Amino acid sequence: MKIILLGPPGVGKGTQAKFLMDRLSAVQLSTGDLLRAAVREGTELGKSAKGYMDRGELVPDDVILGLIGERMQELGDKAVIFDGFPRTVSQAEGLDSLLERLNLQVDKVVELVVDDEVVVERLGARRSCPACGRVYNLMFAPPERDEICDDDGTKLILRDDDQESVIRNRLQIYHKQTEPLSEYYQKAGILVQVPGDGKVDEVREKVAVAFV
Ligand SMILES: [Zn+2]
Image 1 (spheres, rainbow, N blue to C red):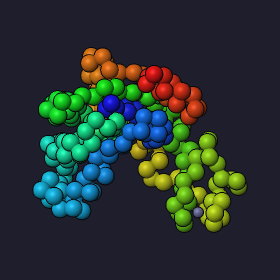
Image 2 (cartoon, rainbow, N blue to C red):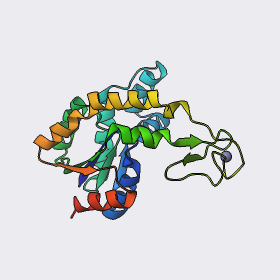
Image 3 (cartoon, rainbow, N blue to C red):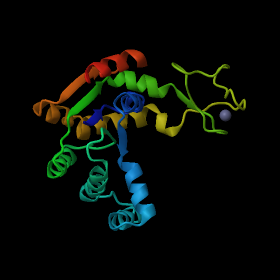
Image 4 (tube, helix red, strand yellow):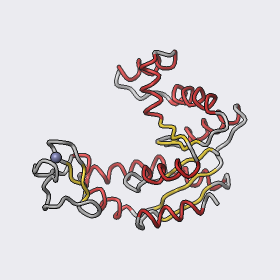
């Protein structure tokens, strides 16, 4: 079973991915992790990727697909959840032909659907401790004292990444580049849409139904 989790930043893909890993004994395949490992090990693809990264350029899709291909061969029939890939239709097409060559396929795509305003509200409620790095959420996981770190008493801050303008910009990029994947996988008949704005447990139950 090869699975893709789709959804905008802040929708809780990470949490649902962990749940699916437990439930399906799946491995999470993160392109970030693959890249770091290949660079560290100095493989051919790793050296190529490092060249682009050193020049401050994006690593091209064919290099990333090459890394995914190597890893998929090692994993064989094991259940895999893709993390952070594909982000564009052209990457999805590349992944499809790669998997086809390995006699594999994407079996299910779960899209967590949520309104932009919910994302802005959720991510905008994040506060970080500049001293220890602990992250709170004023809506879901607030500190005991208002905007003060429980661990060291430091005043919490709103990081630049969590500013509304930055969040809205990321959402725009998502809508433009990644959301077309929803239609792509719908046409393939493997898309399941799940409302992502409920409580974590509620969302988890609905995701679970997709795998019954
Ligand atoms: Zn702290």
